[in-house]
Length: 201
Image 1: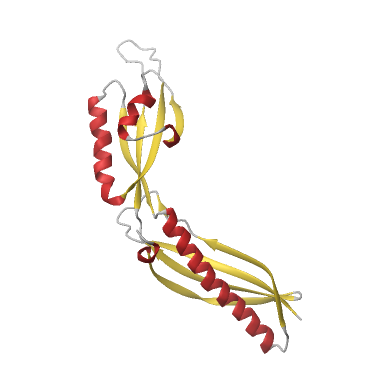
Image 2: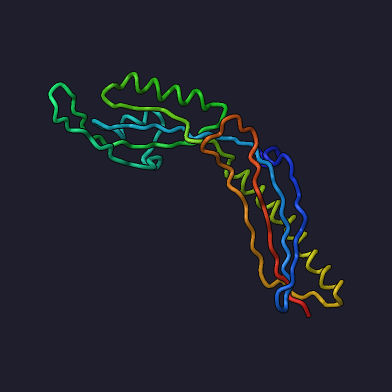
């Protein structure tokens, strides 16, 4: 999805400003809206044999292995109570377009039913906007907010009878377009802000 389509709108917060020492610090903030484009499919595999070879059928690669953990076993001291052996679980995670999310989860479930020697569970690991959409939206928001904060600092300096100088520092913050529990989420609302420190003469 193109960034232009992903950037659905913006709520702009008022700029803030204050004077610190020999400079003026101003901040500008807004909320940007980005549509989610991808889901994370997760395969939880408890390998008994040839795990990496078998999960290739699901298009998982070694690079998709995100976590390995051991599930403790239980040794029953009581007759008639079954002991549970410990097992190692491999978590594979892969991004897929939202339109294919259900299909990919069904593939993992079908794989589990056909490979009973390799206990496998499928789950949704969250949804996100594409990296490219986030990058372009971040750049657009930064440029707009930087101009706003810098112009505000220059205007404050002139109103005080001072001459605005060079920019001494810039910081920015941008939210993450990811949700672990998406529910009915259709749009990410991400806070964005830029703070500029301007020298005065």
